[in-house]
Amino acid sequence: MASAPKVLILNGPNLNMLGLREPQIYGHTTLNDIEESCRKRAAALGLVADFRQSNSESSLIDWIQEARNDQNGLIINPAAYTHTSIAIMDALKAVDLPIIEVHLSNIHQREAFRNLSYVSKVALGVICGFGAQGYLMALDAMAQQLIKQQEA
View 1: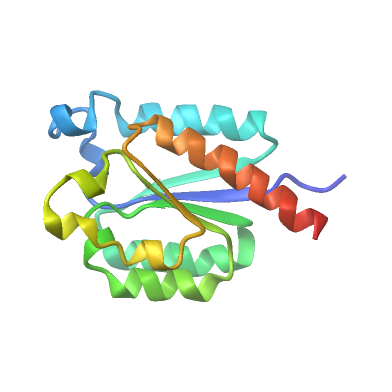
View 2: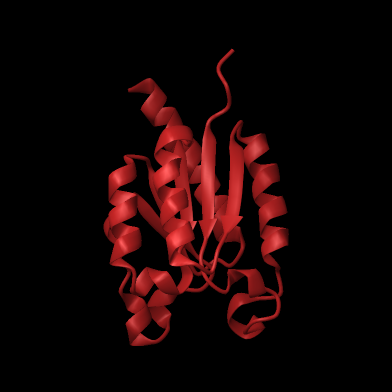
């Protein structure tokens, strides 16, 4: 019996403040709520979710690099690093895993500087604007992607 595919779900800076920070933009759902929903959805899809958050760019890069060795896919909400981190983009390029980018808000309807995403340049797809539901949509898409890879 093969082990369940592992999906690393990374969350960038300030996402630990969800539910408190700008609820008119990000809602009242906490990151813990999102993690619980993701773990349930992953299990229903036959996946194992490894859910992490850091305010540190270096921690996120270290986790991305480690994912190459023990993960089958990566879902990332890089938060503000979306628009600034070439280092995270380069780390993602190096892992050779399917990557899905997630944002709670629609970054294209916000300030002009938020329209640029370095992560989008290396992601299979981007889900934005659906709040916490976006993470579940990303898990559904990742499960389909991993099935395609198995069949290839």
